[in-house]
Figure 1 (spheres, one colour):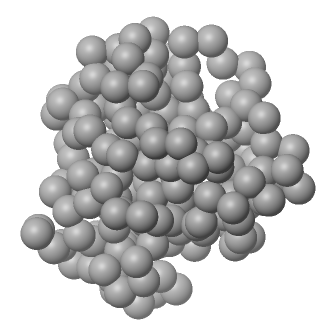
Figure 2 (tube, helix red, strand yellow):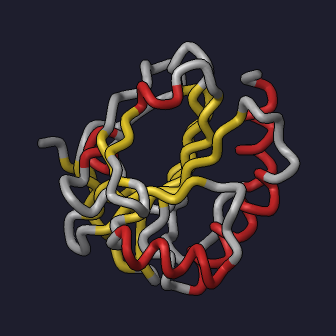
Length: 171
């Protein structure tokens, strides 16, 4: 398994990312995650859609909460063929509770807790914490990566505008 350091920090302390790095132009790797109802989801479930794939460490933290709410707000105004997925390693039960309390309706929240399938496939699994790095990928209808951002400091928010523009351009 590939490991990379010097990519992200948490409060200034370096962390190790596990998995293969993904670059713009690459084919989107498959993954297997769970919905809040424990149903499996894979990349194939979104065939024909543009995917704005957002990974966060934990929805129960302030920055992740703000980010997920912001993408939920933005998703409400996006074209119906753009699917916003927010993935964390939180348990599906905790995700369902958080979504209900936060009024999340326009974003699909998914859990990578079981196998770190998505985290490892996209190179955003944090070795030291078994969490996902804060990142955003846009996958076009041909399942190619057209935008990629791994946020260097885990406590910072991503570039929302750039990600949304990339998703809209991929339609």
